[in-house]
Image 1: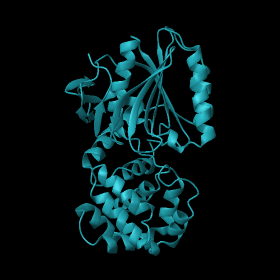
Image 2: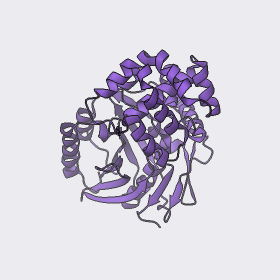
Image 3: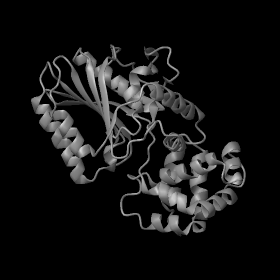
Image 4: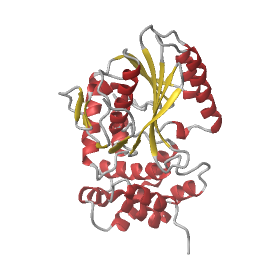
Length: 343
């Protein structure tokens, strides 16, 4: 019996994350992939780990983009109703969109999932509990930089209202465990880096971000749209660059006294090769050795475990270099199982 391909295999992962439509799309795509010979050849010869590279999510986003473009009526109708003949609509889309899908596969996903900011804010409050001072926020793999505007969003975390109460962006994950400690979120400056930053002012770039949201999760689509509107009014600062060179350069810059330097990365390190990961760890190690109580350093990581069986939120604080596993999280932030401190 033939083994399922990478799309059908990932469909089970997506189903476990709460989607029913996207797994059906991926399974139909696997069955109909022969209609897109260039896409099929690229997937078959994929040179790296297909899970780490989120290959299935690239395919799904390409089909979502085609549906949103209304270029293939049968596909658009399938996405609008989320029922019908999946194989027929997706087979036609694969045949007509083969070249476009190949282009989408070449670039990594740009989800810029706003839902993850709830976990990041919770970790920021834990850091503020230890170092009662504002922070300088740095983000690795920032995409369009929507997380850099996290102080403009409203949050409900464990029954506690936090952040900007009047914000059109409200992030309220299902919270399990005690609430996090509530502390002010004071961002003195915010800057990020991405190998391919998303220019939020470009309509095509905004459309690409929307396509990476699962089509059956309207709340995420609406939240992303509201976050984009905030970013258009308050453009985030995202540099084009390589994490492995940008991070040590930023960490080497002088740090203001009584300001905590915070580095955030969410689902970013999985795209680095082993040498890149070693460079990132060395940058943290060197900067941590320079940190002191007046100029502390914090690292907030929202990443898959090495075995990819869970997403962990962790916080490392220097000068002592202690790491806390604060939470186990849904990959897109839909729920948080909090293990960290509470007031």
